[in-house]
Length: 331
Image 1 (cartoon, rainbow, N blue to C red):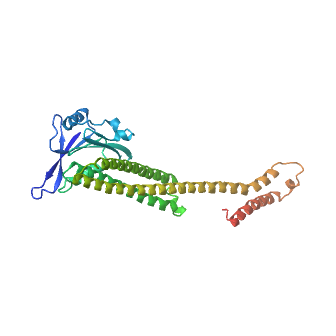
Image 2: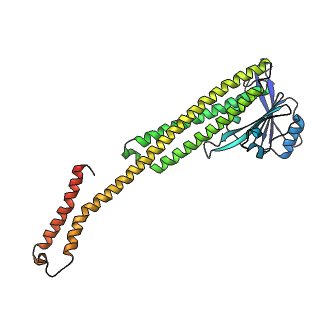
Image 3: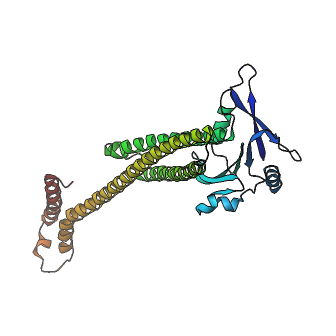
């Protein structure tokens, strides 16, 4: 799908610019005033149309999944290419998706094969009067800021889930028993995955912004200077989020260790219970085994009161260790 955005201005207040969306159908050409071209799962024909219109070469899906920086951050024929990893489907099955940003002149091109939540959020905001600037760099900056805001929301929501898990892990055993350690471990694993993916996305954004900041360093205009300043501010925000993600990762590891420790304690209690029960029933078993041999010369077999005495001895032999263990606090 090929979506183009143009800048629309209010007649009463021309400084209030907003994005105007248009989805191109088959055979339509890209308007000359298109400032943002969004390729969503593009066909080869749509890629060729953008390449012919802007005079650049679009990266393939395989190029976007590469891990070498030279294939993700580079210049080519006056265009700046940056590919970042974004978190998608965070509320369902979180995954990482590559998104390529191409800046050439006053046109921004994005190539993506998934739907990160930040894109519709930015479009909704930028479609209102005064929602965005009138340059491709301003749109790119707005997209990056929305992506960072989205990452901050996910980290905050995950931190709240981690706090709830922490309370459930360390609350009294009677209350926590109903939840189950398996559910806690699954929740910790999901939270850890979200934080790890969010941090990976933030790292790729930081590298991309540092690359663009260096590429705009040679610019002498006021726009280039302002853009570098904004990028430095955004990088500081990203670094603070990375530190927060690192802290949450440490907290998840602590809760994981604590949960596994509680599981080991419960297992030890079960083993201790079986050990105590075996000691309790061992003397009665020994007595019953002795008198079950039925030797001819066993005098107790001829006693009239031998049976109740044996029962009483077995009960006493079982009860005595039980009360001894209770006195020691082992039960």
